[in-house]
Image: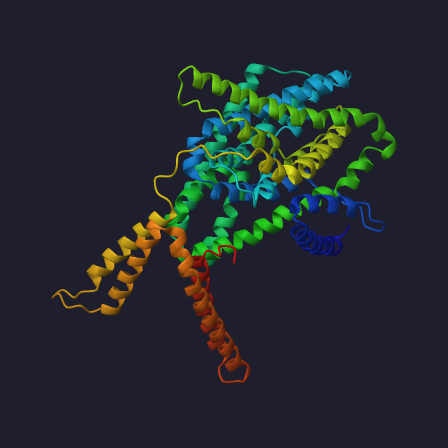
Length: 529
């Protein structure tokens, strides 16, 4: 496939993404499921060229920016508070699943070396950040469950990749030392965190000295790739490096970004992550044909069906065993008097256990295996089957599981809710304006501004006391203002179409109307508009 054909294929896939995503929204299905199935069906369409994923390119192209986006939007307070639980899932559950899958595969295929069995376990064990983000969008979960799943998705790829490298090295060399493996694991993880901190703070230093908002957004977009490649270059975890740099970015963006940079950057990242996330799922489905061809066609698939089904079932069951086992241990410790050990409860544990979708890492990693690796074809087939089973089955039923289990938010309420925070901001603004509204001799020089802010403060105090009632009265107010803006925009366009104003005037005034309308819609509560 030459360059023009590859570009045409990308355009066709983007068009297919739009169609499948739109259809999934209309049918109320998870878009990730529709994209995966649609890509798989497209893979066997007659006349289409064969498509092969470059695994190294897939990892470096898709993983860093999506990990960066997840880390950027992570709730830092909850991430820190629930870090032990996150590490239990991101490290403990991945190691446990790797071991259990390895034992099951060796039992069913005894001629396969133990190291190769554990390599297969490492491939299918880490849930995927992209899959988790795609499926969790639009579902309401308790704060602790959300923090656990989002935090796990950021770190477990690193655990899986490190385990995979150890297992492959043992498979090819025939030698393995547990002590050396643990030492290397710690060095790779800690080294990745150190690189991420260095890259993140270098970004903070550079951003503070940039004045152009476009340069700031572009530099920020490159941060994920810079952290990942820097980590890999010094042979530590590029995944952990990317996540740590993303956490630094998320913590400092409130102080180093201007309002215009934040709005521009958020819009840019929203589109970029949408394209990358959806492209991942369509490419996974589209690569099914190559997997089947590598396996020699349907004739070879028959004898391996039981092994594949066993691996899929083991992956799902092992996660439940770990989640409920850990929760039972927490309950026992809590009952013994350790108050900090708080169990999730069966409702929340059920949701966490079922939310184990696999994705891009599980597909790309086995493709990097040398051809002489024992069991390589079986690893490819199992990886693809686990992705399909978890994304399609678990992803499409997660909403039903949540509605059935009815998870409970048992976390203590926040110290301050949104209405109280808005009222505190309004008080700070009013206090500042009350000082600036008067000249040094005490003369009132901004009476209208002061009166407007006092009226706003009066509304904010009512909103703080009765949020629902205040917003119910405020929405019709914004409806009228937005309708008035719409009339103003229509008149502006009429003036331009009749030749009364130049394009520059149209663009400048339209920008002002757009900004004003966005502010009103956000205040009305239309955050998706």
